[in-house]
Length: 260
Image (cartoon, rainbow, N blue to C red; front, top):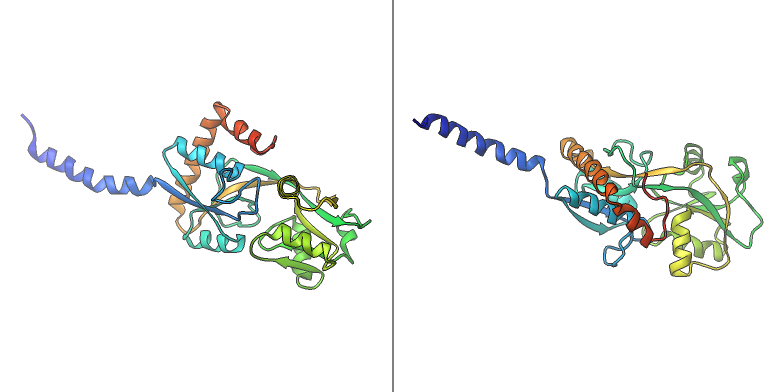
């Protein structure tokens, strides 16, 4: 004989658990990045939106989550992810947002170098920038030593730029003599030189001897939600690695070592 009371209890328990389960399994993740971060992250309106975005979208698609991608200035994105208005930014260094939540796996690697035009100056360590005027991007973390130097000399010897199209703007400032050099990600500059004609006289003039790893940086505003996204991302990324999807995406952008 069917136990009616037991059926009612089971049905009631299902109604109580289902909304909670749905809350723990979001179907959409809101991710943003500056549109000038090509080839990592490009314009959300372009066909090629960046290899980090495409790989992230493929990883989340594997676990049934849709990526909503948009572009904003980096400072603003960090603030909106911190408050929970956005779910994540990619790719970000852990030193740039130490209180954010991160998956186990990174999505990119980066090295920063100084760029000059018609200058014999070269970066060869912190001692070499003592009298050099140069530009950097607000919100970036370059290295512990360089970050301390920038903070101590910002708006004097170091010009910290905010907003959009920062590499192009720094390039123009060097061309116009506003400062001698600018510090930027080598892969980003190489991509802009190749695709946007960012100055045929631009030359690499010494690099910071640190390789930084970029991650999907998730909001600390809702720890459980972000930890869930983190686990799902790692699971999805492992799955698409088995089928070679990341390498196929990287090949479109001419990148050989974007994902670890």
